[in-house]
Length: 121
Image 1 (tube, rainbow, N blue to C red):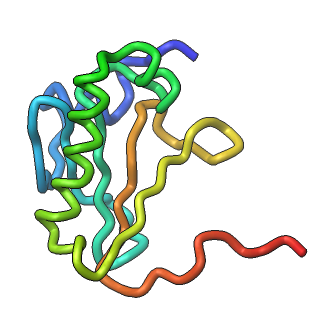
Image 2 (tube, rainbow, N blue to C red):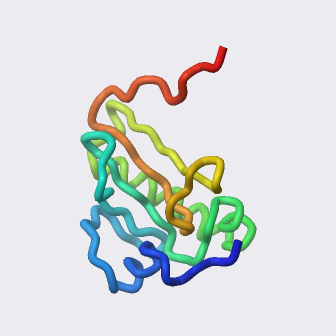
């Protein structure tokens, strides 16, 4: 899938759409989700035109990929989530219900989160 630079996250990175930023560095921008699903629900997006994790790891430098994942961890630490725990989630592609075609990671925390998925027995 080709990257669409008119998506909402690309527009945020260009400063065209405001967000409630909580962390930013050369690799990523982290901000509060507009429809939180937990007391803490933050999105972390890479500063590059990547649709998915596969796209980013195939196209970006190892330094960039590492910097992005360091930004995810630093965001969680800065929100005070590291000690009690948190969940990271990336929805990639149609089967995972990716809504914005710009790679992003959700960080959830601030309460016990329960099981990830229900068992299919």
